[in-house]
Length: 326
Ligand SMILES: NC(=O)c1ccc[n+]([C@@H]2O[C@H](COP(=O)([O-])OP(=O)(O)OC[C@H]3O[C@@H](n4cnc5c(N)ncnc54)[C@H](OP(=O)(O)O)[C@@H]3O)[C@@H](O)[C@H]2O)c1
Image 1 (cartoon, rainbow, N blue to C red):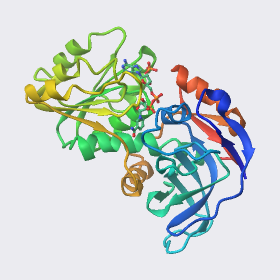
Image 2: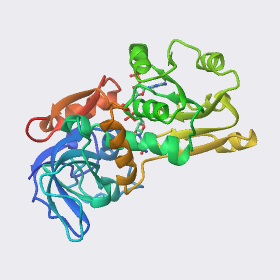
Image 3: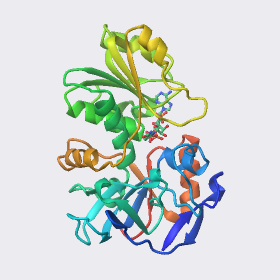
């Protein structure tokens, strides 16, 4: 099969198109013929070694957390998946297995979910990792409740845009930070207010919207937005930071928060991910949540996709087309 492999960690030059043997699904696994592979910040972090403490690389290694495609075969003991079924999933790359930058990927069955009606492969491949992180941050770790007020830092990114929509769908009130170009987009997603993080005083804007502070801050950015986050919380409020794995990003100051009676957590998407991804698929199928705006690039341009995402200049969620039409 065609695949993008790395034989060492490093810059985008280590990404090489190669040919590997088509994998066979083991017990409990689904073999997916990959149509589209979402590109995540975790992919370039994984490529340059930032995730080394979390997963063991075996070279040649296939990167890629997210995929959409069709079921090619199922392993022993797997039920509920027919050959040809359209599915999407977070790959098992986080467990050190080959990921989604390949024509075929084996994924544990309890992470694989039927694709929501109405979505194409490109849109579906843009969903799993950012949506699962947003879900974990708001609900699994943030315990968000109906009627609560939430601030999402980084609302225009893939994690943030899902967080805004999930929070709204759960009956919360949401404001979020973004760059000037994205203010209208965030309103479209359901934000009561969008705050330009470069031009506005975030503290003042939050205070004007909710004088007592917010119940939950979900930080999808890291070191640039975390320092002032505790000051934006109401008494007993909670700061949840998405685990960014960026050097120098120390995460929330847990001790300072505790001394003020505030709560903190660092969140990340957990495996197996099929349970939460199934709930997310239902919201997408109902039209209650929209997928990110996407830009498709051929698999062969994976290095350019990594460079664009890593530079912070990507305007849309990047998705690699591995096979066929949408
Ligand atoms: N641990 C996990 O499970 C997990 C899962 C998914 C993602 N993550 C991490 O979460 C982070 C976000 O991921 P993503 O996929 O959403 O990235 P992304 O789509 O590339 O989004 C980045 C966004 O950050 C915004 N931004 C940058 N600086 C900002 C600031 N100071 N204030 C507000 N917004 C700011 C940018 O907005 P503008 O373009 O408008 O400036 C951009 O929209 C990454 O570090 C990623 O590695 C972790």
